[in-house]
Length: 453
Image (cartoon, rainbow, N blue to C red; front, side, top):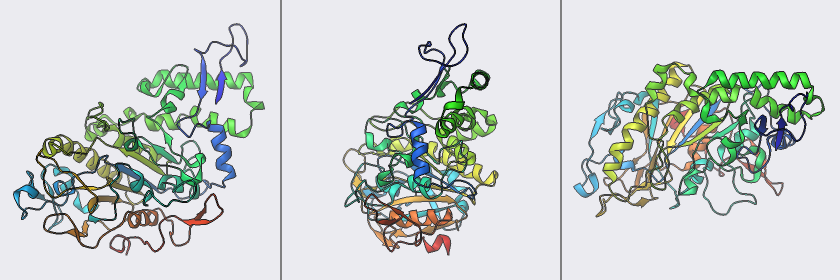
C-alpha cells in the first residue's frame, strides 16, 4: 500500500507519525491484495500496450440468477397457459420482431440491437464465469481462464493511463459468485478488474476524508486534490519515489477516474433519462443501480476497455411475473438510455454492449408461479460495436425449451465482441502459466457471421 502522509503541524514535508486524518492512501483497490504501484510494475513486466491504440471498448451487463428468456425476448403465445405465462408481446420498430410488453423503450430501439434467442451450452451454475470468460468452468489451465476484461487489459492495455483498462461495478451480494466482476485467471493480478463497489476498493480511495460516496461535493473533492498537488510539489516528496509510485499517485490525483465515476457531473436530463432504481439488495442478489449504466458509459468514454456490471436479481423460482413487473421496466429504461446515449455521443461504432445471464428458465411454470433453472437455452442482447443490428439470431421450439435454429455458444459471442474491438481471435494468443499460448476463445469458434459478415 502506498501512503502519502500530510505535513506535521509547524513542519514541512511528508513523514511518519502524522495524524491519519490528513493523508492520501492508495491501497489494494480490490485487485487481488496488491497495491496499485505493484500492479503497475506487473503490468509493465507483462508487456501491456496502451499507447497509440484506437479506443474500442465493451460494456458487459450481467443479470444475476438467469433471466426468463420466454418472458422477455422470446414469448410463446401459441404455447399452453402453463408455459405461455402472463405477459404479451408487442411489436418493435423492426417489422416481425416482438418482445415483452414491459420493454416498450427497447421495442422502439430494436434497429439498434440484436437479439440472440438460442444461447446454448450452459452449465447449471449460479455464477458469472461463463458470461465473462465465454468458457465452461471446468478443465481449466493452471491459474484458470481469464475473463474478457482481463484479456483486453493484457492485449490492448489502457486507453488512458489515468483510467484502469478493466473496471468492475458489481456490488457485494449475498450469493458471492453473482458479484463477480470477472477473473484474471492465469494472467494474474495485473490484469484483474479495478473493483469500485466491493471490499477495499471504495474504502481505499480516501482523499483527505473524501470517499467515492461523497463525489457529489465536487468543490470539496477538487480542493482536496489541488491541496495534495501543492503539498507534493512544495515538499519535493515524489522525487525519491519510483516511476510506478508516481504513476499510481497520478491515477488518483489526475481526477480522471473520480470524474468518470461522478455521474452527477452529467446534464440532469441525461441522468433523468437513466431513471431511478433501488439501492437495496434483493434477497441474496444485487440492487437496482440505474446509475451504473451511466457510469459504465462514462468509464469507457474516459478510457476503460471493459466495464462489467450486475443488475438486480433474476432467480425467480416463485412469483416470477410479480418480480419481472418490477424489474423489466427498470432494465428497459436503463438499457435503452445507454443504447441511445452511445448513439447520440457517436460511440455506437466503438463501444459494444452485451446483456445476458448464466442460463434461462424452465418452459413450464411451477406451482409457486416461478420458473426454475434451465441451462439448455437462454437469450442475449448485443448492441453497438459497429455490428449489423435490427435482427434476431436463432430460435427456440414452440415451448421455448430447446434451440430449434442456429444454436449459439457463449464463446461465439465473445469472438464477435473481440472482432468489434479489432482483435482477430484466430491470431492473437496469450501465454499461460505453463508457457503455452492460449487463444482468446475455444478452438474453432468464430464471430457470428450474421453480425460481422
